Length: 161
Length: 161
Image (cartoon, rainbow over all chains, first blue to last red; front, side):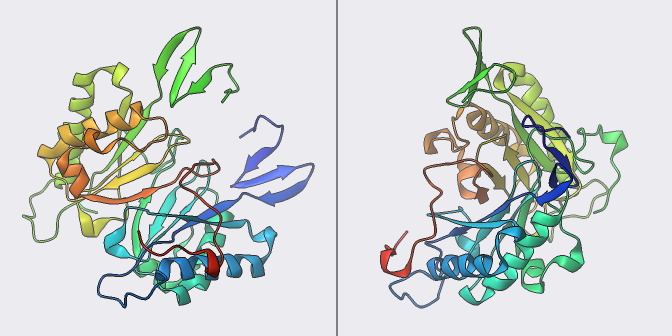
């Protein structure tokens, strides 16, 4: 796909004058998340998770393509601590059930998302914590994707997952 | 914001030669969703929800700006039936706990999403079913938004929601 600035998006990476630059993935962490029944210490664990994730992304370096942001709420309060993983024209993911010590796994998943063409990292690239705590994924808006179809009429429905 | 085709995005609506066109919101419905413990009839309720939503969107007409698509899985199986609501450069939402009879409420929420500037519809525009079954929201990737912040250092953290 040709971008307006002359760069070309190839398998999720921006290619410019022969050089391949990974597209950026944003990890957005709810900074007010506090798991139900957890201790009510002054600082929400979501804020500590955000700092730990920012530090983990810094250690990987800018070439990993992961940037970390904070938000006051992801409306996933029942699955605290929560984070979203997104990039333009890719699937987004929401991950829940996180603690500050999961920052490394979360950033590893975001890196795999940045490396993937469509935002759906291969199963083997997803840390177990992320596999078991995926809250939802959202298809990219305004883009075609093989997974997104027209609504089928009743007679065409194939039952099953 | 100026779009590459000369149109201008004003408060979430595309304005062209003085005419205001609402931006399109995509409602993507998991067609294999089957609530846990529900009857195992041949057709998953998610498929029936998709058809009912497509019919509800057709009744509203194209000026409502809602298009309905299907997907084999939104990775929100624990909250079946589920749907995502998204548009380029806006917040996305995932709604769960839906049944085919909720199609009208779901499409009304998607219409409010299309009308909103940033994909965050006002509370009063959200049907109760949607308010009570919001699984998560995802901030738009690659865009600035007042809700998305830099990660704060520990000393700057303001506790609370």
